[in-house]
Amino acid sequence: MSMGDTSLVEWIATSLLVLGALFYLAGTVGLLRFPDVHCRLHALTKADNLGLLLVCAGLGLLACDWQVAALLGTIWLLGLLAATVSAHLIARHACRDHSATSSRTGSA
Amino acid sequence: MISWLLPGLVVFLLLNLAAGLVRVARGPTPADRMSSALLFGSTTVAVLLILAEWMSEPAMRNVALLFVMLAAVISLAFFGMPRDIGAGDDEP
Image (cartoon, rainbow over all chains, first blue to last red; front, side, top):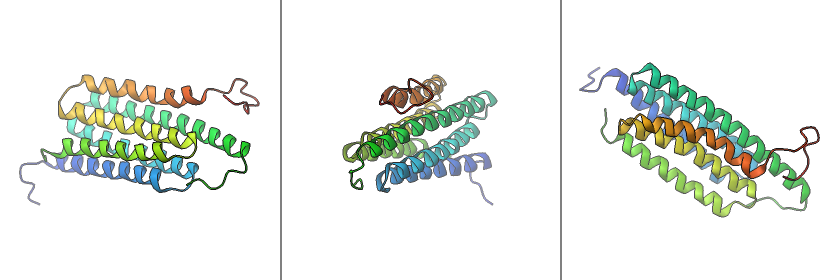
């Protein structure tokens, strides 16, 4: 398999980064296209965190340094925490809003 | 290594942010507008990390770390913690 000047590690890192970008795209499309706030939150938190994981993995490979990889792992875990807390609060607020104004029709 | 991969990714992620603004403009409920803040949080962290690698600037990774910690606080600040953990049905 002629690799040209890029080594195997860079090919793997490149594919990870591109996959991560695709998952970010999926999260954004989900945010724009899904009908309900809960579906949007679901799509957003899942796709974006997987995108962040793939991007962190690709960058960790590129950096070739254990300390940087550990920092990227920490950033990803904190990203999980941030998304979880935020999604929970937003969904709770949306539920209360919906129940408070039950006459609200389907959101656009 | 494709030289334009990292800048291309940064531009792509920033376009994602711009697309997220559509939800802010259109979102019927405040919860929808807040969900794009979630998108901004995670996308900006990825942009910062890619810039750190591209410009080989290790300090940017610490910026990303700080930003991801603040991302959790954004919606916390917006919605507020339930005062009495038990019932938890009061408006913030």
